[in-house]
Image (cartoon, rainbow, N blue to C red; front, side, top):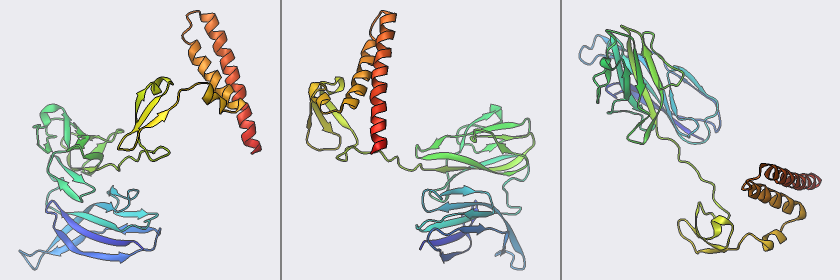
Length: 297
């Protein structure tokens, strides 16, 4: 049964707003996350309390569940079986994050559950609204702006989406561009995530790739060397011995496709078309026979 850890943290200090809570969930059960406004006694002025507004959830666990959402009430239909960590990020009311005029941007790593030092901005239109370089602030004093997010940070963290808090700011259809009207004020958090590793399908003996030696690439004999280690393997040429191991229907498909490819080299258009048509007819007959045999099996 997956263990759930729920944390409540404050932007931008990253401090814990409340102690983490622990729970044990049923395998593949549904989970509803709920975030409400919170208050905390002001340590510098004990009779008074500081108010905090919810910003977004960051969920970490299985790859199918990880990510950020600005929905205060968020339902996970299937939690799977792995441990989960859900962090509710808050901002102090009156403590920044969209007051005044202009756009404050910050990059956030879903995987690290932390904010990144690098700017998430790749470009701004008009260019004069942004200082460039590592600057994270964009002015809306003179005109509406369009902010384009960096596609990746450190070649590892890849852009996912904007989380926008403020007046009338909205991301465009491509997701990476953020439009803010003139005099608009917003806090824009760019969420980044490390993509899941690509799983490559392996060959019959577990190889991912081979180095071809000799004439293997042109259907002649030679050797193949498995990438990553392993002994070389001889590969025979494509010829009568190979065709002899095929059924009549398989031979029709193989020869038909081979002739069709060879006919493409003919300069005479009429002869080329006639030969390719007959080749496709032969391959088609063989394919129909294979389909009929498969249906009977």
